[in-house]
Amino acid sequence: MNILLIGAGGREHALALAIAKSPLLTRLFVAPGNPGTEAIACNTPLDAADHAAIVAFCRVEKIDLVVVGPEAPLVAGLVDDLAEAGVAAFGPTKEAARLEGSKGFTKDLCREYGIPTAAYERFSDAGDAKRYVRAKGAPIVVKADGLAAGKGVIVAATIAEAEAAIDAIFGGAFGAAGAEVVIEDFLEGEEASFFALCDGKRALAFASAQDHKRVGEGDTGANTGGMGAYSPAPIMTDDISARVMRDIVEPALRGMNARKTPFRGVLFAGLMITSDGPQLIEFNARFGDPETQAMLPRLDEDLLPLLLASANGNLPAGPVKLKNIAALTVVCAANGYPDAPTRGTEIRGLERAAALPGVTITHAGTKRDGARLLADGGRVLNVTAVAGDIAAARQRAYAAVDLLDWPGGFHRRDIGWRAVKENPHA
Ligand code: AMP
Ligand code: GLY
Image 1 (cartoon, rainbow, N blue to C red):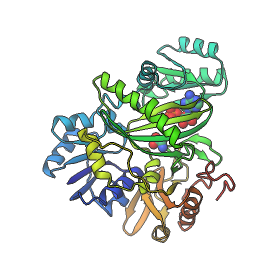
Image 2 (cartoon, rainbow, N blue to C red; image 1 turned 90 degrees about the vertical axis):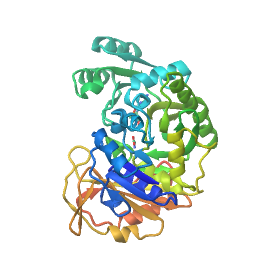
Image 3 (cartoon, rainbow, N blue to C red; image 1 turned 30 degrees about the vertical axis):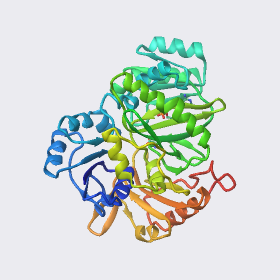
Image 4 (tube, protein in one colour; image 1 turned 45 degrees about the vertical axis):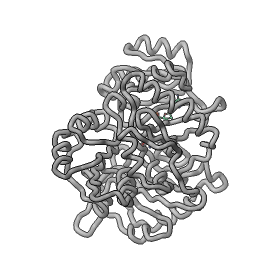
């Protein structure tokens, strides 16, 4: 089979590594890819926003399946345009991607289908939103409705902070994503992520993971795309995972079917595990980054038939087979990330680090300059290690990180601290 994978991050390098192992694979193209995918696939300079060019490429190269990594092309309707051209794709249509693209849409679906989530209201007027906040009290959570690169959520400790957030969102701080706000109750608990493959009707439990969204140690500082992750998330016991499938994932699939916009692809549930059980914080319509780098090394079956079955509407009865091991990923980011990452600094020692047992390094924002490898983005490298448990995986991952020679970058030393309580700093 010929596969075209869309994206350029660490998630896509991890997906490419898994797809490249499939005996079903003939050729793997990645558009645009990165220096990591270049070593195992054919990088192709296609623009994800140019759907006509992607369709034409699929015809010329006889692509059997397009796998879409990031959310932007999903929300822009790439899967719809491919379907219209008769090309199979892994990922939801534009309408189904509203589960990620509109927080208000998702909250309304939750309300209708009894999916446990924080109590909320939607507003398109700042005055009404502020009155609601004052009536509810703080802490309270203010969210821009649309996609805001992970920055549209303000957890307000005071009413004044919530009001400032409302003004910022309606004032255009997040562009069109802020035409509407969702205000919801603050949930207390531990966060975890749960992933399920979906084929429109059926959902197959994939794996759990926990990421670290904040830039600083102890989960402090600015929100980022994710500074590290581990899988499984110990808090996601079999019982909690089964509840998430029954109370959150399956009703959402039923709701999307009833709306005649069946969800295919991977449903990523961001959860708060509260004293009342799992509550949905948000859905994403794609694999997580860096969660995927920590989940895929645990997969104990061929990924490609699963992606195909999701696209074709014939997933087998689950769950997917996972190895009884743990994996942990440390993200190495360029100095200045997330605000203003410095580009162009040289990274050395990668081969040495990647040669350690159980270690895989995936690229994100890197570029080649002759024989040199340079930083070319915010999140630059992902160092993943597998082992029998999270503590051992973490030790291996940091041993590899310590072999990297990159003064232009930084990483958190405490990835996995909740799971490895006795020694939070590696
Ligand atoms: P989101 O982009 O919706 O995942 O939100 C970003 C982060 O804000 C989440 O990972 C949580 O840490 C926090 N958050 C969002 N909604 C809530 C909530 N209702 N209660 C507490 N924290 C929240
Ligand atoms: N790591 C969080 C995300 O992929 O949205």
